[in-house]
Length: 116
Image (cartoon, rainbow, N blue to C red; front, top):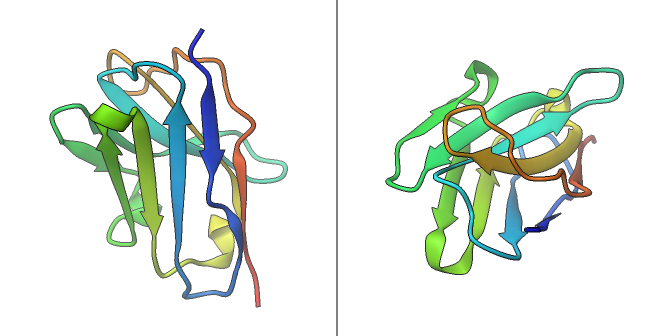
């Protein structure tokens, strides 16, 4: 059973940056993604990346967030720049064989709070 451990969250002012990491205890899938869940809202997909490199992003983060992965380290990253208050949420990673698939058990997530 592969475990996912997210880290790197914290409190940041609007306009600031954070880099999230997702470390897997075993091999990761072809497609890995970052998701987030804000209070009172459903979990939503933020960004995905394939093992070959293609990526996709939800419209609200395009141009601000960058997803990357290190297949040798079974780790996925999310560089978040120009953060906004609406980015406040718990961030999770997950993945599967295709876009939008979430085949792992969810980890504990990492809290990102954007506030002045």
